Amino acid sequence: MTSGKQRVDGQSAFLLQAHPYRETSLVVDVFSREFGRIGLVARGAKRPRAALRGVLVEFQPLELGWFGQGELRTLARAEWQRAWPMLSGPRLLLGYYLNELLQRLLARDDAHPALFDLYAETLQKLALAPRETARHEALLRGFEKALLRELGYGLTLDCDANGDPLDVAARYTYRSEVGLLEDDVAADGEVNLTGAQALAIHADDYTDPQVARLAKSLMRALISHYLQGQELRTRRVFMELQDI
Image (cartoon, rainbow, N blue to C red):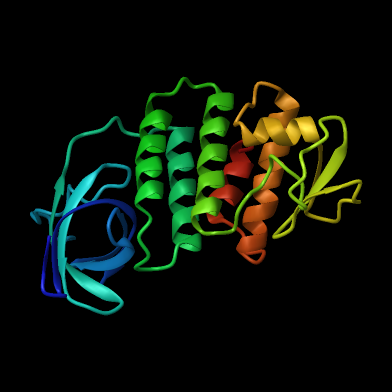
């Protein structure tokens, strides 16, 4: 609900990151369903008895209200919509990886309601998924692919760059902003794969470990391309512990 152009209330959102601001406040980066990624000042949130202190937690569905205009609005209220299972261990770092992707790739004030819903669904599935790494990787690959589609970068894996059907036995190279090129020599940062493997990634079928590895390499290459080579902090940390 909005009142004029300055006050917004009852918005579903997730906290992506919080930074100290002055002595008692925080600047928070949130991903809201109807307004996209926005910056808010949570005044007094660091005070010991502040109502916001225990509410502004990552990976929990929030209902927010704010007012103001410009780069930073002022947070008026925040409540948990409901309590979700908390991420822990490696899953917690995977959650931070999703948050960093959203922060690095989403522009401010650009709504993506379908991506918001998928983000919420992915967090729930991560929290409840078995500890097996394969399940976690499948969730990450699905979210990465959806994020690139939402941003308009596209990820066409069911046909070649000319729109022709794939030959399952042929080899292709996926080139950023071009697509699958048959019999092309893979350059640094590009991925070479068969038509069958491309179709499996398109269908999110990672039962073949080699397909899972290729999907990981492909998404790393594409995300690095659109980040213009900037390194993700969470990926660097996670690679010191285990591969994602």
